[in-house]
Length: 314
Image 1: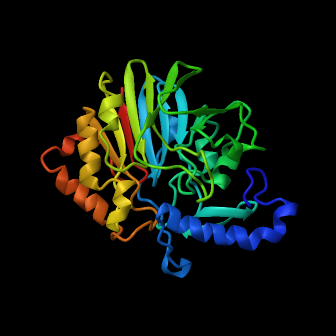
Image 2: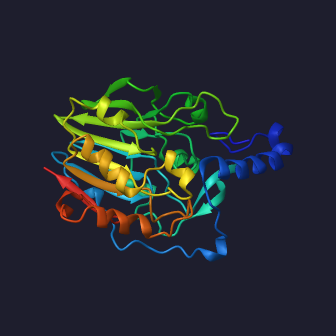
């Protein structure tokens, strides 16, 4: 059984086999297609962000791969769904991870990122809630925003506060950053038998500027209903893990992701949740190819689409 502090307690040691089996069950539960480690050769990204040079009077967003983003929101430093290391999965022994291997390395180490003001985890699936990364980021000066029913997963970690937000709830953090939980079309259980764990999409607001993070979601009209009165500067939308067809209910296709961004009136879009891990049956490059085809004639609306790339709004 995983624990936030050490991975597995002594009392649970003899149940490791069951926990490992649970990890395999989780794979089918969240729609993961496991790839043998020897078939994956992790490459280094061509682009590397330089957060030490970012300015606090600007909004700066860098994609760290998969669903991980580093954001300087006019002086408030945020990291979303961090996953820094070679693998994601279950961690029955400390930070030793059993699971999927990255195809492309994270462009920044935790040391290069440094202390952040806020950690956001959209939900508890292992590709969004990575224990080794979260343990490395912990600081008594850092806040956490997490989904309803997931606070217990943070037990033993040293953060300033762990705030569960349910759909429609919002919280203001130091520096004037407002964070609101938005209902999408996904589910949040870490393991199939976990009850009451939800999944959030997220609205970030500061200085009159709004960023929408879709996180994991299938196509839904819920976003336009909840964000009808909000001017969205940037929408960060998942475009991968949609095959077989049944996965589409909880992971939008590239075309559906674009449609949802357009329905909420987003000025810019960033495609994510592709190209880092092999999560499903579509070819690795298919999501971004379909995305670019669907964005033909409006490529100026794409803020970035390469791991390690940075977008800046003054």
